[in-house]
Structure formats: C-alpha cells, structure tokens
Length: 356
Image 1 (cartoon, rainbow, N blue to C red):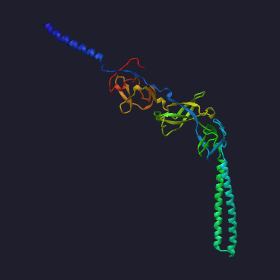
Image 2 (cartoon, helix red, strand yellow):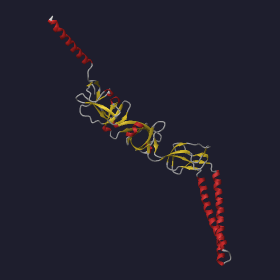
Image 3 (cartoon, rainbow, N blue to C red):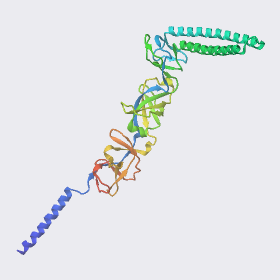
Image 4 (tube, rainbow, N blue to C red):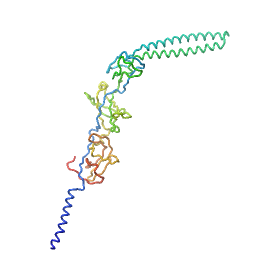
C-alpha cells in the first residue's frame, strides 16, 4: 500500500512533465522567419521609359491674316530653310486693301504739299502786312494737320503692304516639317495653326514619368532608339510642373547627345534611368517592408536572433521589389523577407535554413 501511494504521485508528475515538453515542442516561442541578404540595385537602373524623339523647339505656324488656302508647298518630312514659303492664301482682298491705302497716301501727300505752299505764301504776306496774323496761323495749323495725315497714311500703307505679304506663310527658322494641319480650299482664321515645324538643333526624348518616380528622377540617363540605335547619353532638361489630367503622369524632356541626323523625329526611344547614387541603394522584396504609420521600415535579424526595426528611405517601388537607401548592414545581418507585419521590436525569431 505504501508503494502504491508513492508511485501514483510520481507517475502524475512524470505525465505533466512530458505533456509540457510536448506542448513546448509543438508551439515554439520563437517564430520561424525567412530572411535574405539584400542585393544592390542592378546597375543602379531604376526603370526604363519609352518616348519619342522630338525637336527642342516645335512651332505651330499660322497665317497672320485670315483667308482661303490656295497652295500647299511642303509635305510632312520636308527639310526647309528660314524664309522658305510653306503655304499661300488668297491675297485678292489684301491687294485691294493695299491699293486703297496707297491711294489714300497719294491724296495725303498732295494735301500736305498744298498746305505747305499755302503756309509759305501767307508767311510772306503777313511779314509785309498784306494779310492778318490770324489768317497765317490758320494756314500754319492746316499745314501741321496735313503733315500728320500724311504720316498716318504712310503708316496705313505700310501696314496694308505687310498684310499683303502675310498671305505667304514662310518658315521662321531652319527645320523639318513635322505635320501639315490644313489643306488647300480650307478657310482659316488668323493665327490658326496650319504647319508644325521642328527647328533644327538638339534632339530630345519626350517621355511620361509616373508620379512615384518624380522625386527620384535622375539627371543623367541612357537613350537607345528602338530600331538600330546605339546607346547615347541623355540629360534631363525639364519636367512639367503639373500632371496630365488624364494619364496622371508628368511630361519630361531628356536632351540626347547625338547628331540630329542619327535621331529621326518621331522615332521611338527608350530611356534607361540610372540612379545618381545607385551604389547606395539596395533591392528588397515588397513583403519585407513594414509601415506602422511612422514611415517604411525593415526588420534586421541580429546574431542573437532578435529582430530590430530599422527605418529606411524608400526610393522607388517596382513590380515585386522596392529600392531603398543603403542600410549599411553589418557582416552577418539579414532582413526578414516575409511576415514583417507580424513581428515586434526585440522579438526573438528562428531563421529558416537554406536562405540566401
């Protein structure tokens, strides 16, 4: 009986101890995590954007007078020189206006000559006392009025002559005709665009930049034509101050360092954007990022198996990875690749074997 009394408590204690051990092995306190050793961003390349080759200055040319187009003298792709005629409008009405202005000028000139002669004649008479001073002053005023009318008529005649010359649209600079926006027979208003001219000079790549890339848009890039092009250096010249209301992207221009003869207008070009400090950026999976409202961060696994949060500067989000500022990791430090939102600072974890 005494032996039974001793064995029962011993067996119960052993059972409780084995049950606790089994429960501990089934539910370990330290969670298992998958980690990675972050990689430097490949070549510092952030992204590639596709655009078109454009002239730095593109002008939409239009007539300075209204009229009906009677002749189109160029086609898209035509290389033109400054002053070369591009289009003509009917100048019949302009010619009539110029003739009327010329006739008014002749009448004003004749009146001016008459007033001058009258003023000179009365001047001699008033000096000899043969006429009154008031009569001479009236003649003097008429001469001055005639001189003013002559000046106005000369200006009107010059304006009418200019209007007539505006019936011929000419190129205001050397360049290439990009597009013809009107055809013969069409009646156009003054200033309405009829020819789009790309001026000779530097060629640029026009691209659309997504809003997330705007803050880290590099100044230097590499451009490559879609068909048979060699890579050339590209430099950011301008970025639009507001986003396109439809695409929500920002228009940007990169100046291409190559002769215009090697960069046909309108051809497709790819801009490889390289980070100016690509060596200080690393790529991590999107699942490694954790943001609790205080900014993006990652979990660093120390040698002691304890995770510690480290805030990072997000450079750019890609399809499956994110570019962040270099963490300056110590030797042996790893980043939690998955389940970052389930951890807490100072928590002990177990690292899954076979991670890179």
